[in-house]
Length: 418
Image (cartoon, rainbow, N blue to C red; front, side, top):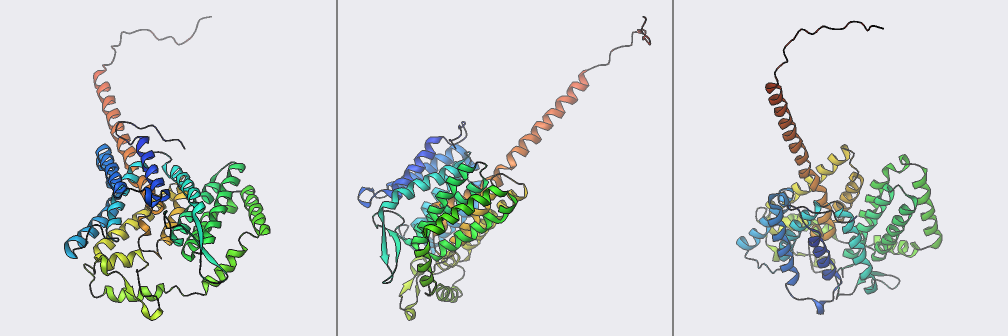
């Protein structure tokens, strides 16, 4: 998993290390140590360097998400007069720059694996800041201190949910038993953190993705089944997940109100489907439920309410393109196809109950890496076609230049004398 050597027209390892450094600082560093606008300026600088280094290669795979972000920003600024520093406008600027950076690094071999290791390191650095917010007398939800990133319990659950799905899939695909056991141990630890957050969306996404991952388990042999059974038996006997199971029983009896919010949002969307109502008016009043004003809690509804159907169409095409690329990788039996399939299922399920989680690091890297083979696959075929054409032209020239040797009438020996 070491960074591949870069050529003149590729991204060096320093850019990747710089991106990982920004990731650590943005999530781990305290607010007192952060310099305003420094992270955004560094993201823009890295994006400009990637465009200068790779040109159109870094833009063509992510045309749809860039078109979604651009159309969203244009509608907000030109139609609704929103400020670029608005909490629901500024994330799209950062999303555009980070899309370019991630796409440039996706051409480097093994980037998705190094990114997962980096996510694990960041998660371990955040664990000392975990605290519990009491939701009831008997139970609470794990969250982080407000001075660091991922302070929302749902964000923390989706972060470790990605790690749980990644290490579960890589453990299943590993050929060595010891490596598989280590990967699955990390996956169980990540699932434990997800269970502590008591996030229904995160745990649902993890379970569905794990079911997709293990759909071929019985066909892979006896050893993976035995290893998984031993780990689950140890966890069950230790009773680690029993308190979380009790918390989820209480949590499932609560009404999140998302169906009511989505229904009210769809009713408002009918009034202004072309340009939306602006980022400042995406809040939905649900005071009859005793909760005041809340966000749409859905990316499709949020984009439609804020900027209309144009960004929504580009966003849907973005997801459809990722699904097609994953299906193509499965048909071609690529080695990374199982990982693509599991992570894509997790992303598609995890972003549904949140407004802006599609711009999070784990979702952006997953979709970008999945889309990279869709464009890169055309280059080898084009190069081979040109090489074959050149080879045939050289053969024709050689055949035209060679003249047959004259017949000098040499006798032909039909037998060998003793």
